[in-house]
Image (cartoon, rainbow, N blue to C red; front, side, top):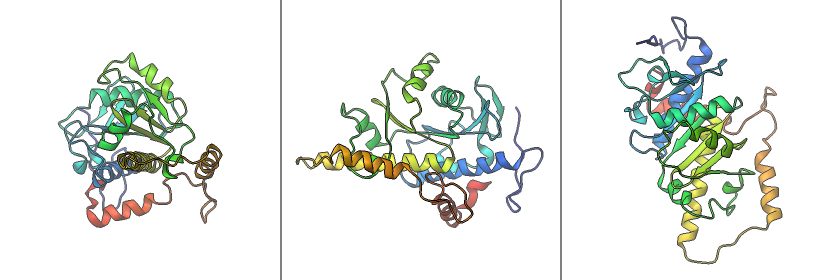
Length: 267
């Protein structure tokens, strides 16, 4: 079994052939697993978050199937290629077949996507069974111009389903898997986390509003369209002139919060 050498976290520098870009992606992806756990979006050891290995359109990182999200570390993430071959693994675990089918399809088809995140939250699953899907009831729900939908075909272990999954996702950043759960993409790990966090909150608030058994106030279409445009266009560049992406502003702060709570995700 190929192994990934232990990293000296004191210097935060990769060793023995692992380049710094991949190591940083590992740290960010491990942080994302811990944050998804922290914000209550886990389903025991199930579900999966993946990140493309920088500089490669063939390899991505994903969780060991059997580890809880709170256990995930940078060095425990498994490197796999689009054919399902494990390239590097320091654990005794393998990968989730459904995770491979979903994530390999999206990474192969969407080279603009750096991270893919899939959840089975109560709110996400509940909205996934509603024929109306996610409604633009709140500012948070107006974050995306188009939300993709993919019909349920059973547990996602059939490679033939990949083409329909990718076709339904199109160029969208978020997708509701009917009778299943939620999926979010991002150019960066931080952007993908931002998308799933906002999507989850939008689902939660819709269900809360519907549960009130009162008439719902739907904003005018023109207001929805304007709000979407406002929320899609990022704020001005940062102090160094670098273009911001959704999630880029809070991502360093989220990792600082994790460092205060438990920095072991960096191991």
